[in-house]
Image (cartoon, rainbow, N blue to C red; front, side, top):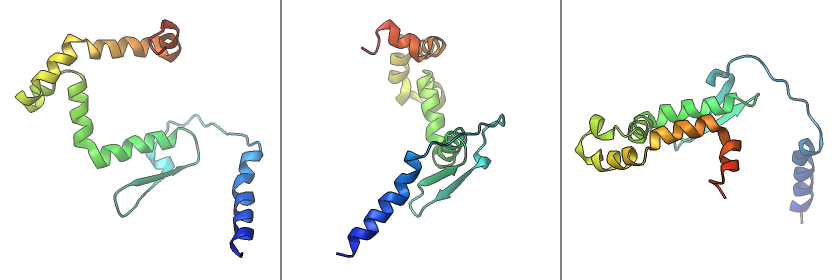
Length: 125
């Protein structure tokens, strides 16, 4: 079977970085989508490659805004309970739910507490 040696070398070659300790160099530069490479395939899916830890996240947000800017904007409006104000009466019921349950204000409180504080409060248990 000619496939087995190829698979063995493939696994050894590509698993090598897992066993080698590497030092990460962090820069003080602000992350940018320009520090990452975004390759778009035939179906419009972004494939992001970057050399530091922050840039791929920034590039992913940039790619989402490029592909789905209208949807991202709409979701921001709905999450703040203002969809009916911006896009019409069909969003009014969802707005009432968001406002009644104080979703926008609660998100701000949770952001200030942080993940560790939320875990200590027992919300996610």
